[in-house]
Amino acid sequence: MRILLVEDDPTTSKSIELMLTHANLNVYATDLGEEGIDLAKLYDYDLILLDLNLPDMNGHEVLRQLRVARVGTPILILSGADDTESKIKGFGFGADDYLTKPFHREELVARIHAIIRRSKGHSQSIIHTGRVAVNLDAKTVEVEGKAVHLTGKEYQMLELLSLRKGTTLTKEMFLNHLYGGMDEPELKIIDVFICKLRKKLSNATDGANYIETVWGRGYVLRDPQKNSVDEPRIAVGA
Image (cartoon, rainbow, N blue to C red):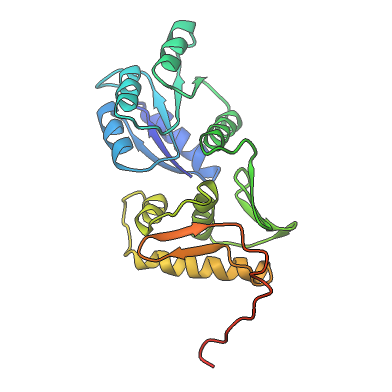
């Protein structure tokens, strides 16, 4: 999952980055509200962590501008202000949650996961697709209780596919999710990741196909057809 952190205090920002990185979340940070707005418009994040006391503009104004621009990314306000007026103003401008500093890492991570699940239409932390279960909190994948061992990039791709199950995702969307516009490789790397991910899921589910190719557009995760395992397979290169 990709998190945009808008926080001006370098010590606090670094601390939050370490907290979230430890929880296997990808964090992209800026200390300016204006840059935060630009990044949120340009890239696809799963959640924005927003401080209110920024050097160039108030966090409430950042929030307002994002919602006016129809940026629907969930926003969690992080602030030292615990007064009711500040909280009401934040929710009024479209914040999804409000957490007062200081806070415990476990609470921050739990709130982040809960907000993202709700925003994607999932109330539970485990997303089931056929026999495959993706645990968003533990960052694990299982098939009927047996672990499926994925690399970090493979898990991130399956997580994105699971959160948007039934929706065709372009290679550009995968690339943005994995690298966030930083040191991005060529698009063909996505085909390589998909091929490896498909093979691991197929091996774990007796040959079922979960990831469909939508030619000219991208890939989509669907529940496999009931007869997909029973259909005869054609040997390639025979």
